[in-house]
Image (cartoon, rainbow, N blue to C red; front, side, top):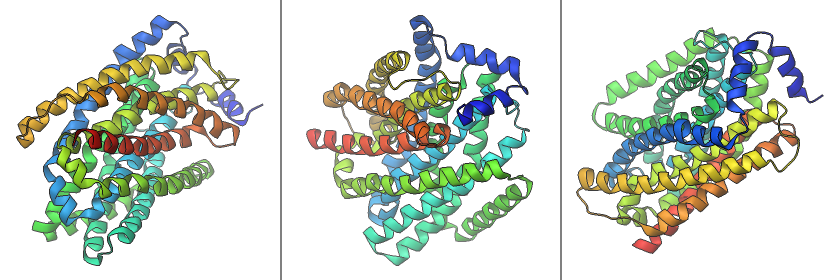
Length: 414
């Protein structure tokens, strides 16, 4: 018997009724149920995520010139921080959904699994931050900028991690209690919340470092103290250490991969800045692509754990990818419309619809979702828990694909 299936049999004894009820909702085979889930559950969540992304986009567009000229290392690490932070906590949400489905975790914030996994994710989020910072040093080679950026990203990472950890718990527990499949909403919400708070926190601590250094260092100390307190109340066992090492290996490799996005963004920052609209849309493009990939990735991971996928090609997943590609087309069109208004109101420029973006974006998300499905299967076949590896990998790849896509479209319109 597959080792994961053994765990499922043992764990279902804790919360059997609710777990099985939600599984039936999440795995209904009818096309009608799939369309209802995509357009009445996932789509509203994705729209909310899109709006949150543009809140972050306003900050990025407003301070893009300042970051580009005074803190260029931040541009190198920004895609990685946005993506990997969403990856780590998206993976956390994926673990929470699986634990809820199979009855290992009770649907409450007081469950010990919540504290333990948040602490693990917080530690894991510091690794890619450090790796990307080193890449930034190699590219920029300015010690003064490097030191200030390191302090800024560390303190922002700690505070972002606390917010994201409990957001991940709520994004899975609340739908679960309402008998809605959390796989359909949790990962998109967490990756978007990651983008929502990442850029404002970076900009906020950057400005605080410049203007109120004493208060900045106070926040730095408070963040370290909170981490120590969280460590004290976390009961880390063998299973948590296994999860940490498994995700650590994946995240460490992905941190290097995500540096490609950062180098491309920094290298073509002037092109992005000249296009105006993409300096605002950039977070939304990365996040929406990663969100759609995450939905398919988490759905596939859960079905693997439940023993519902026994061969490489799965007809239901393929239909889901097609349905969510249609959702992606609508998301892309709405993103362009919202960006027009945001650029006009926040930056004072007049821009219009970008036809190549609207037509080609669905192909981008179709590719991301297809890759997510096969990644989950591959990770399971090689012995990695797809809950821990799929979301981080697909969102990192989506960031790279999206950055290259954005630069390519910017070349066409500038």
